Length: 608
Image (cartoon, rainbow, N blue to C red; front, side, top):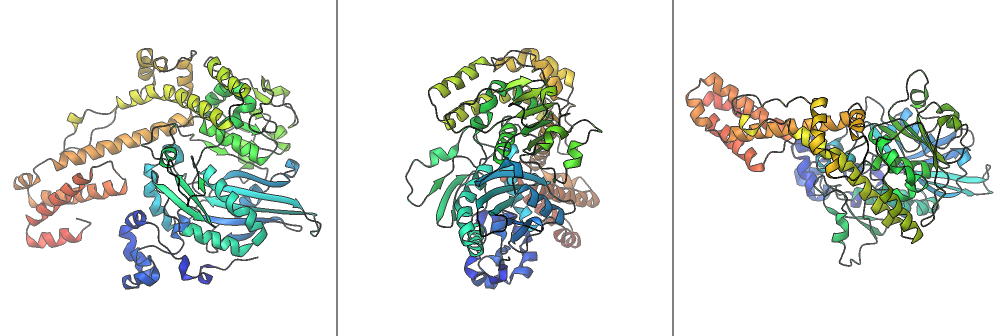
């Protein structure tokens, strides 16, 4: 089975990304013109002359689309990769094959949707659409792409078919992407997968052409995304949004007859449905995720395991979970040996599993959540208990949280009463999720605000920034100094929850989540210092300075200023646009004050 490649597609499918992306690739345009045609061909070539190639629109959203089928001799096999030029290593294909089908014991008849995440093979070349990563800087930290991982979004169909030897039709349509937009891609699959199974390749080709016409995934913009006759309205959050708010709701007050689907979120799962079997212990699970503890979710199917793992990762938002997590993990995964070895302590990772074999293989892990079938909205399962690990023998063990972990914080009875009341009053699951999400958000913010306040105090005073010296260094993070600040400005100012907050902070400071969070904040603060240093330079009278210095020193200054401009551009420093313009004007003025022979050399080096 094969699809026609790009050559077989009509010119009507060619469309560049929107203007924002055209600007993003600006300087790469000359190199791409050679590949895409001369500028005068712009009308016919529909955008290539501006530095944009066929499939750039598609690549901004997806790496590729795969169809995985079952072969009686080979087992699971990738039947189609589209577009055909998409690159996947053999290892990546093997991972996709095994992760795209539920384990045989899951018994998933009919249609099933789930998600997986796998490690990208090392040595992969950076592709052109990485230029679009300038949009990454405007995303909340927990939605930024992880260059080392792909997501797989699966629509699996298994139905009886007597015409086939095996007696069943089994196939998965899989979207491979770097973007962690779980809800969005599951919605896309709901629109296209059922018809694909009926109409096959030409339908998939048409759907991919639609994706290639989409505007770029720009954070903060309301996007209209047509696919196979349906128009989806979405908005990707930005790092400037107030946490816990959904902007799209305000944007959709007016009826729009062209819109078929409005998505209030691109990435969130139904958090209450996932936590429902264990919501009495939701605060303890929040602690385990916050501290990056090794955690296994044992579930009856991939959809339940993947949703629960994603809900756990999401519960510490707006903090990013910096360790690895696998919404659906199988014994065939390339990291199986690495994650199940007993020769060392279990790694900081959250695994979602369905195979009974894992009950034995992972019984040495310190924290295991065993869940039964997730109930439909409105129903509440019997609450799972916290049990000792030695009681977990098989996957058939009763649902529960198997751990010997003692939470640092006292359980908040208020949220439990509120959710229980909601169940009794048959409050919709969406409303329950809003309540639970807000609770987790307030808990995380109460925890992180003292850290943010202390880290902000490590920043040097602005008056210590001199244009003629390197930017000053940040002060060192001293755990004991931070602990002393908690007495007056700790979480007790914003949270009613009592307990051993100090112990929780001490544990957190040794975790991968603190390490990732602090590195991110440190990088942001260093960039801020660089930006302030640049602004200080712009306020100086540089022409007066060169009158008092030699030509050699003046040339050295020009080269340093040019490097500053390049750095500001490359690292997206938080510099005001007029500062950059001022600096360019300064550079030009200094060059014109130099002898003509030096002017020629300096105008040729770098950008001005």
